[in-house]
Length: 210
Image (cartoon, rainbow, N blue to C red):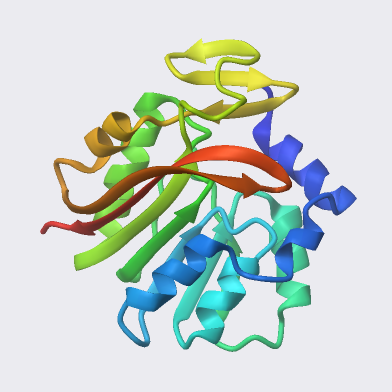
């Protein structure tokens, strides 16, 4: 696989996705409606920081992470006056460690870049970071996405196309990731425009069993 950190650092340096940081996504709006007030949230793969800001402005305490140091530096400067929001570099390819426990782990379009083995380890790490009944909320591209099957196959449902690696999730696969350590509250599929392109997604909301 190509170097994905370099891929995203380059996109952020060029400002290719900056204009997507002006408003929260539909997924963030959905999550804000039901999580408890004053929740402690860990965001994995914050990108341009739009959802990070929305979660913090809704009154939550947010640690927003990304493996792109370029994205984190830009977000830290741009959103320096937003209270209760910290940006920090964290690479999910490595073990995820924080001294705090969280009420919510939020991951929009950030869990679908890894092999099955690494993905399952990441879900296990997330479970360890959540308080009892804490929420795992994630959305990933699905096997119904228009880009599915395009490019070089890395493993089942995972392809590299023009330097961009994607692992496409089915509902059954997403369910298998969380079935052991979480109570599933919602798994659903749908279509949405992601970064200007029509996409298909799988959405999961689950609560940690302890």
